[in-house]
Image 1 (cartoon, one colour):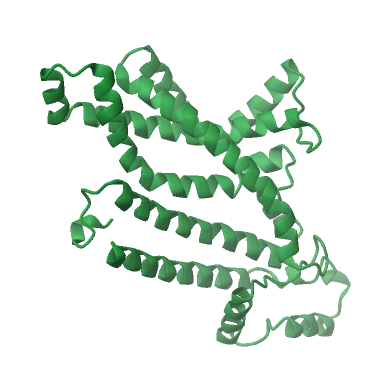
Image 2 (cartoon, one colour):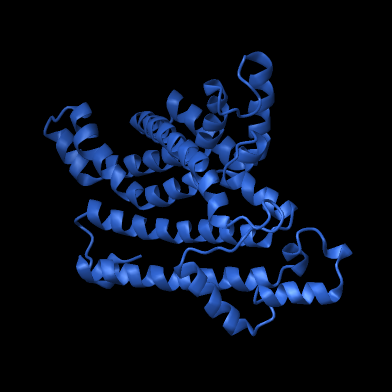
Length: 314
């Protein structure tokens, strides 16, 4: 187990190094106007060069990269240029992250309960009513762009109920629609995978043997089928949780939630390069970390996996 963990950690560290370097290089390809706070048209070329020089953006790329990693080691993402001029990016993120984390955890809790329940109902009677309804829901969620059904929900529900259209931290009812929207996608994914794994388990020989011995169907479902169906799901659960916690860009922008997603869109619109770089980097690192947690969770939950052989790794 220790050898497996060390190997996965090493792979994750290499992946993070590549991701961070790629983000750094891509940000250096963006227009330099994003560092002038919207004053590029009124500034002389000499002033522009002086600002870029003070920020170290005129140094050779390898020196910039070394400085970039040194700043990351000290959790220094630079200072905002246009959103909140001269404010450290870490302070801006500290104000935004609680909203994204709160909505993410709430949405993931809802989607786990509803998605797993729907998947179990679908698998108990394949081609039955619940299976057909669930399949239709999964197909709809995966076929229609999220922004379309987000708008449908926002407009139709707010028109027929007292629920507000936009988020307001002082109104608890304004949390309902964003949570529902953020939970729709994960719910469909959990239902699809639980249904698939449970159907696979139901067709295995040990299940047929248990039925032949007269074991009640409910006991077979709870003790064997559902339990074993959750093992492969463990691999995808951490990355799904991390991606959901990072916040839905569509949902936060649509409902005016002051979280990470809305921050990214606003920073891009206002060409605040340091903020854009910090948010993109945070999302990317969370994705890599989620995959690492998924691999470790899979190995811990399923003792049948051989951690010392090639076949035990993905």
